[in-house]
Image (tube, rainbow, N blue to C red):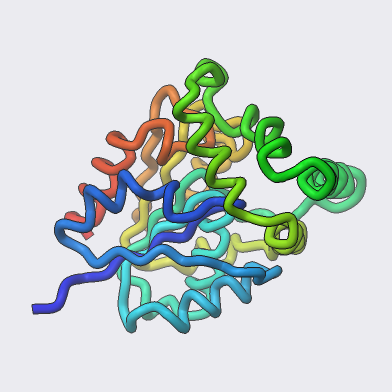
Length: 238
């Protein structure tokens, strides 16, 4: 008897390492696949390449940028997705006017650092806003994130920045979702705040909202056991 499949979608500059704890928990019952976006520079291209390599039916779990890719996959092929988990992500496009320009400047300043001084140097600045403020002294956590960032290149970083700056609105996708869905967020996520996840959950019919205490944006690494248990229970119910 074939096993069900779970497809994991990493966030910006992330790879399989961000999902290791969840894979360890879920691989006993599910085939687990982690997407690599390569140098794709749009969310739709990331979604299409993932759909091309995925099985005909699968559960889908996306974190941060990966959650936005998941919504593009739902836009393209909702009939293939049996269950959906959206972690520390968003659904709105880049703001118009000065707020949107400010976001672009902030992202491209980090790219300049990565290009001139290296991915790790850039990562040391970037990571401070990505984790719970009280965990900035945890060397093992910080190193796991920096090592993951260092495995990427400035060219990949530039492509993913373009994808995020040109992100499409996805409210229509959220309202059309009909598969079992969990919307999960670290309570102290300063990048993708809890209020946004409450909005998202309210748009999805029958969605569950899961709040992970004492965690920032990198919830799968900050609270791996709690997140793994939440996802395992959600998949069992789905």
